[in-house]
Image (cartoon, rainbow, N blue to C red):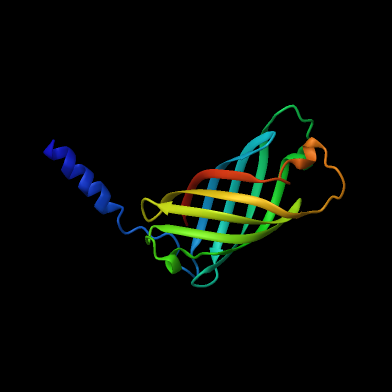
Length: 162
């Protein structure tokens, strides 16, 4: 029992210095599962810190599992440029935790995201992100395939410091 407690304490101490966002030059790579109505897929993000609380990046999402919808590659894929305000240090919850609201401009829509990251070590953590469109490019009634990436969706995955 004592060995187990010592190992757990060493494990926690080794990960205690993790920092979620360090500002200018900070580089994050995220891979996640994406969930939305009629589709599940994979989400890949890259963010680069421009200042103490500002980052820009790119996000790509591809819908793999389509439920009863005829969708071609253009319907399944979305690419977005993104801007985030990393406010974890402003809220001062924990240096390993970051919250980042932001805006994105993609091939399908203009929208917003709200993400949260938690780092277990200096290079590895988990994140969750909520995405919602504010304005979609196509007017009128959307087909089920066109609603992919043009609706509320959520992603869960891993984040890495580069």
